[in-house]
Length: 130
Image (cartoon, rainbow, N blue to C red; front, side, top):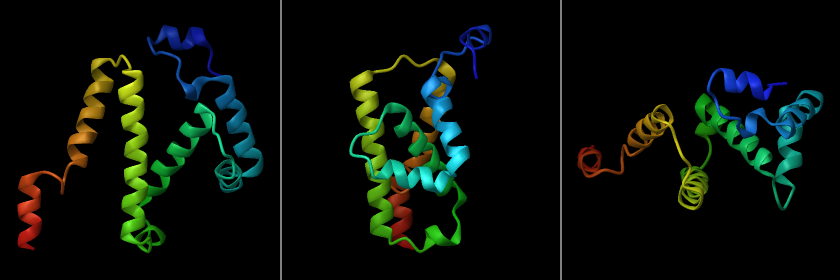
């Protein structure tokens, strides 16, 4: 278990991933497996913050693999999934307006700029030529 004083020692704020609820969810994941836990969570109507973060972490894991199975997903469905995830991020950033340190802001900025590939005018002109 991550202790609050250890986080303070490194100057890191406590996050959902360090909470007791997160540790309990990890125990459940290790006992039943990540696939079974995912199935259990997607059956729920209302998820806790911890469960939302866990699902987002699984999405990052699977989308980051870029494996053959994901390449079979219909493009429209993949775009819908990504758009829904971006809506979550938009709601959190807009409603919570979290205080971010420069390192976190830099990381988020870098990933957002990378994610605009295909959306900005310069790239669209390039893609239209293909």
